[in-house]
Length: 410
Image 1 (cartoon, one colour):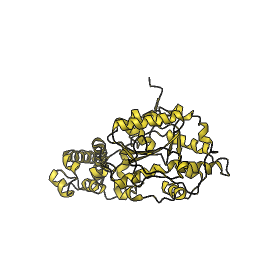
Image 2 (tube, helix red, strand yellow):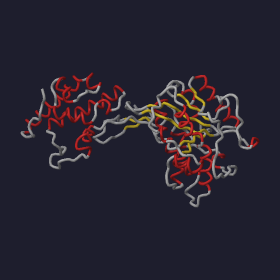
Image 3 (tube, rainbow, N blue to C red):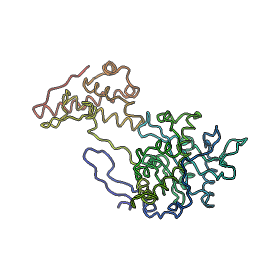
Image 4 (cartoon, helix red, strand yellow):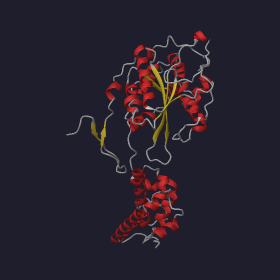
């Protein structure tokens, strides 16, 4: 029999995906979560025209690049939670998606609250030494070198109901944490969900930074390569700024939520909506056999109502070849962990299918230069074209119709 957390799934005929589904391992904890009193109490929160965060000029966040430092950070959070000094952490991720099929997390940004600075007039005293794991408040965790250590050291913090995770637009971050580290988030306040509840003009983090902190978000590194090591100072500053202001912004959002005129808009309602984000389950991208239609006619998927075939200049043999090549590209991208467009572009895929080459030389004449994986697996491509075309020709012959054989280049 099946395990209790495994259910059967039905997919449309056009989806190639597992028919079984493993349930969320923390579903019960998330759904039964009772919010801590301090999460709902805003009486001690000060309303501010502008939130400020005091840092040194060269404070680009504390780099956590080895397991010992990550262990120290996890213990500092655990001790802070036990003493009541750390109730919330701000969290964000930077991922890499170019030339990879599924993508992977490169950096984890984590911030904790800064100590009260009232005795110093709100100013931070310059220290002779830069902040470290014991004294810093903004941390950049190298998710590449510490991929093996994150589950054991950060996992308990992320799944602890006693530590609130403040994140912005966590719909992608939550499943990425599951995919790369097997980590699950319990007790979340999503500032993006709060923005939507308050009907702000924008639900983006840039808007919140501008509204509450007077900071203009630097968009220069949105598409940067986060695999780079060492990470340049400007990229570190960009990454640290994503979480540096988030806890102060969270406080101001709570005040606005509790002061809202609608009883349906409150801190509790945002926490409830954030629960649904926590329940998002990572699933591998399914394969859609009809996806090859997006390669034809610029993705408009025009079909002939009579035959059900794509309305294009492709013969049945050419369309069959394109279908087979589309399948080959998806399997190759998954196996090699490459993006489908790097394996073979749509234009090249359509050119190969239209001409149906029979030799490597003919393939090279069609697509020059050949993408590396097309060159390396050229025989697989030729076999796919030959088998699919032959099957289409046989079907057309047995049916007594069809458009006749398409062009085949030798």
